[in-house]
Length: 255
Ligand code: ADP
Ligand code: MG
Picture 1 (tube, rainbow, N blue to C red):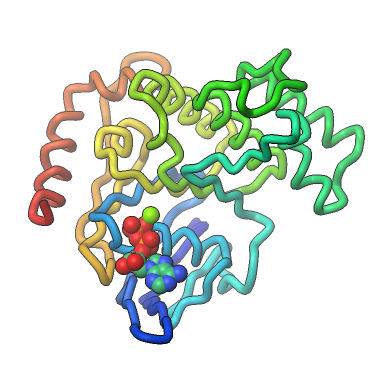
Picture 2 (cartoon, protein in one colour):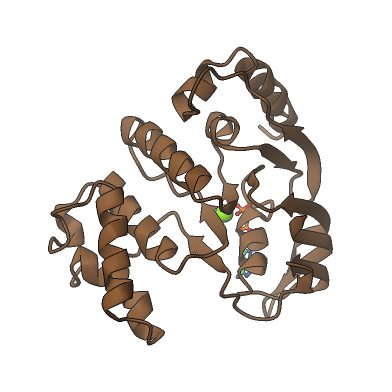
């Protein structure tokens, strides 16, 4: 079943002096529980696509459809996690995770327990009363993930969530997040400029053209992995470098 459908989506931004056409005739579908990455040159409309899905923007033309219904305003089924973690420095880790629940009037013993359990699941047991500045970048991103998943979104949007991290942390967190999202059977749309990350984490990779963005090429990622999946094993798979080279070539023309 299609969870998400972009149907001939166009998006133009208007300022007082100019018009920017970010997307033109963008069409693709994403199935339930599928993990899809969007890659493409800077400014080709990847973040715009996520903002349309989140209902933060409305398309200038075409339709963005979730569960067979055009999106109309902010959608409860969707969790959105950005590159910057946007944790509030004056609130503890636990209070940061609880903030959204508080604002929605959904904070109670049950949801607080769930927040604590998520933090524990993500290796943050014992850090509930710490402040964000006392944590590493990788830990803060895990807090941001807990804050997003505590609402149990069916669809998770990730906009370059690992790009601010050092390489080692990024690889470790990439693997953790991929495992968590596979176990929880979420539909995921990841924006990344890291081709290897896209291949290691995704079921499918969509390569965008330069602005105005639309899908230029798509790759079904099918890797031979022994035993339990991990992004490390994915990177070791024999098919990995072929995918990497093909996608690299697709993007290379813009360098
Ligand atoms: P990407 O995430 O692929 O780098 P974006 O979706 O952020 O690209 O942006 C696509 C294009 O739209 C860019 O040219 C960008 O400058 C422009 N754009 C994005 N947001 C706005 C905005 N709020 N107002 C005007 N132009 C914007
Ligand atoms: Mg972007």
